[in-house]
Amino acid sequence: MALPEHIKTDPEKYHWCFYAKILLLEDELSNEKLYVDERNKLLIQRYPFLVHIARIFLADFDDPRYLEFANHNYKRLKNR
Image (cartoon, rainbow, N blue to C red; front, top):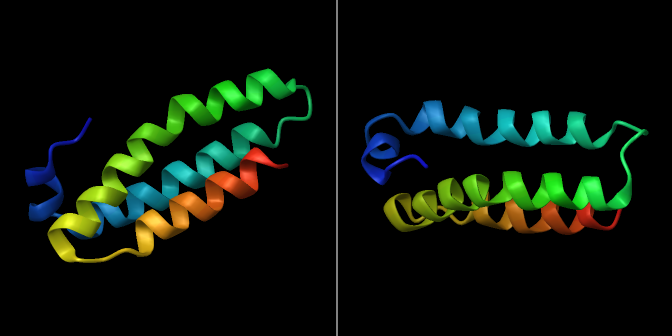
């Protein structure tokens, strides 16, 4: 996991990293050959990193958008 200090020194990089990771996850989940349990496993594996980054943005920059987006997107992807 990234340390908060890395994000403080280059928030723009982690902004794009956050959204790139979400796009990669959505691409992986769009594979029609995946079973429901495989999709759920991918979500569970990938989301801790995204939430970690989002919580750092909230704590260090007082920016709730990342955590709100991560929560909303998780629910959307979980119910697909």
